[in-house]
Length: 252
Image (tube, rainbow, N blue to C red):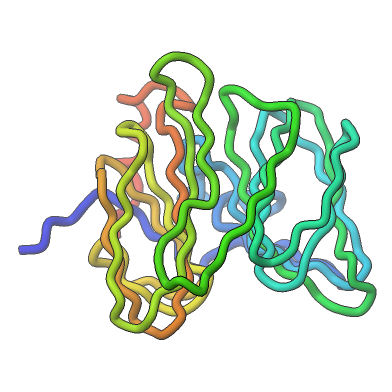
């Protein structure tokens, strides 16, 4: 019998939708007007949105608590500007991390007047923060999982968070090894179909995993792309209480 790890699937077709004439946002967790009993944040990861922004349009965001913002353009590029004056151009193949204090604001703009852009936006509750943003590039052409960011919290032995991305060939297998023992893992499928820890996942699906050290993957389609985030389970509340809340979630 295959051992089943503790986990919960967030299906793409069950995501929330916030939409205007020039903006569309699919929300893996509760966000804005989308609120659902079983779509609460996965511990310190409390926003995972897949956004499409119209040509020349801009969005203003208010951050209500200390948060690290992770921006990953999928199609095109975005320009960001935060309330302390940091600004940069971030295109597909790069990841941008912003460290923002509570009550900070930032703006995201589509720099192309006539083309849509698509990007992922992740928010992590931060136990600490830095004053400067950080940007790094990655290459999907090597067909392997690659770490695209790793941020250790301050303090001796404190956990941090990390992210990896990878493009896999059909039937290619890979394993992700967790960096911090107390972290949970969240997997998001950007493109294609994969089997993740013995679960079938399609484009736009997410999978939360806890009490696990290694995660196994197998691509079921060519050029399947996945994002892996590990984040502290201890960042919000007591570990025992968190485990109770996770155990109460519908299993997959």
